Length: 386
Ligand code: HEC
Ligand code: HEC
Ligand code: HEC
Ligand code: HEC
Ligand code: HEC
Ligand code: HEC
Ligand code: HEC
Ligand code: HEC
Ligand code: HEC
Ligand code: HEC
Ligand code: HEC
Ligand code: HEC
Ligand code: HEC
Image (cartoon, rainbow, N blue to C red):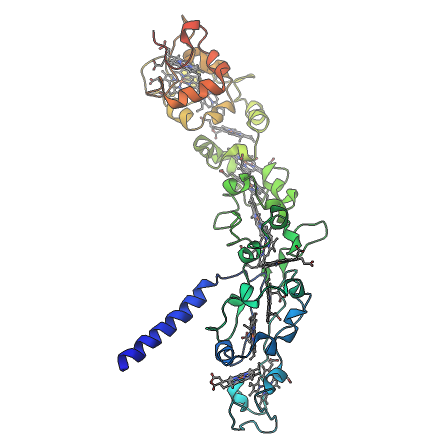
């Protein structure tokens, strides 16, 4: 006997847990946090055959999320013999104040139920042909309903499937003047956390969103004005915290690692080269440096040689060739790396280059680049040898 009871309890608990977990959590910017100081069980009332309409009669006709559909005490009085002059009145179903108002004490105000309107455009009457459960889930195992019983965006998309509807964010979301989505609310910001639109703003998102922003169906424009991107991306306004204060002194290290990708915000051709040339570092203009004079070398010793040697530049160039291009022209490299007969012919290619997929791809996409160095007919493609 005992065993059966326990099993039953486990099944019940299991059902509750399962019902609870099946409903995904929802955005607290769309559905603000609630206070529900009330004792109430949807499950128990539904089990007795009470319908949603008995307590939420206006749900079928409501045309706006601003409407309050939470029942007042009057809805309970249909069955509960509440008498405000008899706080402890016995009765079935319960009539004593404390039966519904937790912690009720006479002569102190009862705590009120507090459900702020959802910040969404929603018209119940336009969905009156859809059953309540389609959106609010199975309520039979629910006691107090919470925001978990309110529908997810994904559930709306199960009917509003056509792209022109799902991409039209302000069909459902509130809009600002100008048409962008309203994202600032007194109770919190609407920042994507689990929208499943591929735009989740996680930790480090402020500088690590390249992948999300490059998607063809990127949502960024729905909430952000271009000017907010330009703050960082064109360097017009300096975001106070993007580079550290003495960045000029340390930028070389990041540039050599190419992390973050400088080209996301700067054009090497103008921004970097111009300053390097002004600073006398550009090899296109005048420079006080001279690699042939050990006293006047710009790069550290062992940077490059005409043959054997540490050739430190090799590994840095492999990692970030664009950082070299912020000072050098192609010609500077061809001095040693050209395949032209009579030149040094130092191969700039990585090991196992011949016949490799990477070689083939580069050759296919831009053979003219190969022709900068390989100027003879017998050196075309990726499989020639001498
Ligand atoms: C198509 C989906 C959908 C259907 C069908 C639907 N609802 Fe809702 N319901 C919502 C959404 C979205 C909200 C939140 C916005 C709002 O309050 O209007 C909500 C909110 C509510 C609320 C809380 C309102 C408040 O005051 O904050 C109640 C109660 C409710 N619905 C009851 C019902 C009942 C009863 C039915 C069936 C007659 C029903 N709903 C059918 C989507 C739906
Ligand atoms: C259609 C009739 C009906 C309406 C309307 C109704 N109730 Fe009830 N309620 C009952 C009955 C019958 C019980 C007894 C259930 C039991 O003991 O199994 C009950 C039990 C309860 C209980 C005790 C449940 C428990 O856990 O033992 C609470 C609390 C309650 N109702 C709150 C409310 C509130 C709040 C409202 C109004 C929003 C309300 N009821 C509206 C019929 C109703
Ligand atoms: C069967 C459940 C139930 C019982 C019993 C009950 N109430 Fe309520 N009462 C409610 C519900 C539901 C509301 C609406 C929720 C809200 O507005 O915060 C409410 C609201 C109130 C409010 C605020 C709204 C108004 O109408 O002024 C007061 C005050 C109140 N109840 C007092 C009492 C007192 C006093 C008792 C005992 C004599 C009592 N209630 C018994 C369910 C109940
Ligand atoms: C006996 C009365 C009663 C019945 C029947 C009832 N509700 Fe409720 N409902 C309430 C009360 C009281 C609240 C406010 C307390 C709470 O959140 O549970 C509420 C709240 C809600 C909310 C708001 C959730 C939130 O916190 O925003 C939804 C949604 C809801 N009910 C849907 C339904 C649906 C769907 C049905 C039918 C399957 C239904 N209710 C049947 C009394 C009832
Ligand atoms: C069961 C299918 C279904 C679900 C689920 C559904 N809708 Fe709808 N919705 C419709 C239909 C049908 C219409 C009316 C035809 C139309 O205007 O496209 C509609 C119309 C609308 C409209 C335009 C109403 C107007 O003012 O004319 C909005 C806004 C809307 N739905 C929002 C939502 C939101 C938000 C959700 C999720 C909480 C949702 N819908 C879930 C089927 C659904
Ligand atoms: C058919 C109605 C509908 C459309 C269209 C819609 N939304 Fe939503 N959206 C909702 C509802 C309802 C919620 C609240 C439920 C939730 O949090 O899942 C929501 C929640 C969200 C959230 C909060 C979820 C999170 O990540 O924390 C974001 C962000 C969001 N929407 C962005 C968008 C964007 C961007 C678009 C346009 C590409 C869009 N929505 C189009 C109905 C819609
Ligand atoms: C549903 C609206 C919404 C969508 C869609 C959205 N964002 Fe945001 N985003 C926000 C909000 C709100 C903030 C916080 C802004 C604040 O704190 O002022 C934010 C913050 C940011 C920040 C940090 C800004 C800073 O100065 O630290 C970046 C970067 C950003 N978003 C980029 C993107 C990109 C890229 C996309 C597209 C993949 C995108 N966002 C899509 C609402 C959105
Ligand atoms: C806080 C500064 C900041 C803001 C604001 C910002 N970004 Fe970025 N963004 C970055 C950084 C840093 C990177 C480089 C990340 C890397 O190393 O890949 C980047 C990279 C990108 C890339 C990839 C660059 C490429 O070359 O393909 C795109 C696309 C992008 N951001 C779009 C946006 C959009 C759209 C917005 C406005 C919604 C925005 N960003 C706002 C800092 C920012
Ligand atoms: C998210 C955009 C962004 C990225 C990515 C970025 N920068 Fe910047 N950078 C800026 C902005 C904005 C300024 C200030 C604009 C100005 O002064 O014109 C700036 C200024 C600089 C300056 C001038 C600093 C000074 O104090 O005068 C240097 C040098 C610089 N960046 C180098 C780099 C290098 C190297 C990288 C790659 C490792 C890089 N930046 C990546 C946005 C970015
Ligand atoms: C405001 C002027 C200025 C700007 C803008 C600037 N640099 Fe520099 N850069 C310098 C100066 C001065 C040095 C030499 C001092 C040093 O090595 O720290 C230097 C050195 C470097 C070095 C080190 C070379 C070596 O091997 O020692 C690299 C790499 C570099 N810059 C990359 C970049 C890139 C990439 C950008 C553009 C995203 C950039 N710089 C923008 C002034 C600038
Ligand atoms: C900030 C500017 C700057 C950057 C960035 C830079 N260089 Fe240089 N580099 C110079 C200057 C200045 C010289 C000396 C020019 C001369 O001798 O006329 C030089 C000389 C050289 C030489 C000549 C040989 C030697 O021993 O010095 C090589 C090879 C070279 N650089 C390779 C590279 C490579 C590869 C990169 C990228 C990893 C790079 N440089 C990045 C400014 C730069
Ligand atoms: C003074 C001659 C000289 C100059 C000028 C020179 N390099 Fe090199 N480079 C070498 C030598 C020698 C090696 C080492 C070859 C080896 O170890 O197999 C090398 C190796 C490399 C490699 C590595 C190839 C591999 O094995 O993966 C790269 C990339 C490279 N250089 C890029 C450059 C770039 C970019 C420039 C111009 C900015 C440049 N080099 C200028 C002599 C030079
Ligand atoms: C910066 C100059 C330069 C560029 C650009 C260049 N190469 Fe080379 N490549 C060389 C040099 C130098 C050698 C060594 C020549 C030798 O050993 O005689 C070489 C060797 C090769 C070899 C023989 C490799 C081996 O391991 O024996 C192949 C194949 C080759 N290059 C293909 C290409 C292709 C395809 C492209 C264009 C995608 C290309 N190269 C671009 C300079 C270059």
